[in-house]
Amino acid sequence: MTPAPVIVIGATGDVGSAAARFAEQHGSSVVLAVRDLEKPVPGLSAAAEKAGRYERVQIDLFRPDTIEAAVRTTGAKRAFLYATLGSQDIVPDIIGALKAGGVEFVVFLSTVSIATAGDDLSQVGPEKYIPWLHAQYEIQLEKTFGKQGYVALRAGFFSSNMRWYYGGIAKGEVRVAYPDALLELCTPEDLGRVAASFLSQKPETVTDEPAIVLSGPEPVTLRHALEIIGTVLGRPIRVVRVDQEENVQEMKQMLGDATARTLVQEFVERETAGDDVKRIIEEGAVNMRKYAHGGQNMEKWAQENKDSIIAALSGSG
Ligand SMILES: NC(=O)c1ccc[n+]([C@@H]2O[C@H](COP(=O)([O-])OP(=O)(O)OC[C@H]3O[C@@H](n4cnc5c(N)ncnc54)[C@H](OP(=O)(O)O)[C@@H]3O)[C@@H](O)[C@H]2O)c1
Image (cartoon, rainbow, N blue to C red; front, side, top):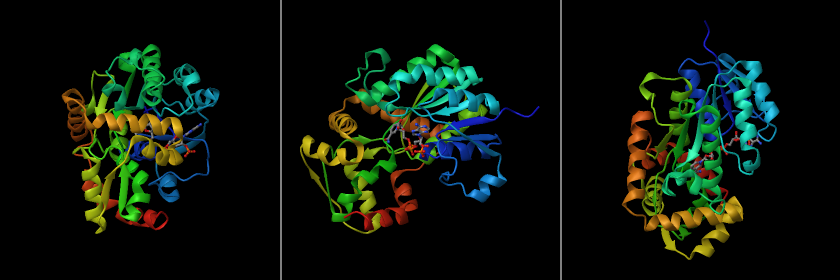
């Protein structure tokens, strides 16, 4: 019997696209659920998509009926899911649509900030919007699918967030309120690799835990990460500590006020994080080495992305 396909909701995203590509490499048929049927999937050429076990369906996360229809018509049994900003009021509808369509297991991209906030999901309040939003998804996934019916990949800070500092890197000076915050530095590619192994049910990744913390294999401080980028690019980068409000004002141009405030606050708190938070980050690194079979550290990420960073810098500055 042909195995049921897996559905990746948000297949044009960085993590979603990697999850789709690796799941196909593991032998799964993959439904690329996208809101724009014409948009390319990163890392997948049109020719490779045509030659591979892929099909596309259109969905809009803000219209759960489109999710249910996509699952039902493709027969997908496993799904990759993002928490989309602004979706807090329809979380039960989105997750209910997956279940009603026939999904049996969900791989949800969550955030480590839930774990660092204390691990009791019901205690995370909406003033901490990002962990709270993801907590709403995790709570609902457990209600709808049960502990064995989903896995929440509680990812830490992405390496790809280094783009927030490209303007400063271009000028040779990065101004931040949290230079010594320890950051997980997960690559979207590695997260996609982990997601895919759960989508394709590779036996070595079977776990009883519904939530897994994931960090890059070698977490470092922001200061150190910038030093690594400076070395790879062959240009000095000065790191200057600024107050929180200046940092929020700069980040809100990229992320909006609420997200910028939550993140800057969270990273400032990271500078004085206790051993419990450091332990969570280290546990994430152990998990990444296990589930992504090694994982990419900051230096490797910077080397591999050197050309695209240089191209982005020429447009910043
Ligand atoms: N950045 C971090 O440090 C960090 C840390 C922990 C967890 N996370 C989690 O990771 C997520 C970001 O992952 P990423 O970088 O892979 O994201 P991304 O590249 O921005 O991709 C997001 C995907 O969601 C799709 N999408 C957005 N709104 C949609 C809608 N209404 N209907 C259908 N699809 C929709 C996008 O489609 P389009 O291509 O059409 O826009 C895209 O495919 C965050 O939102 C958070 O949940 C991030």
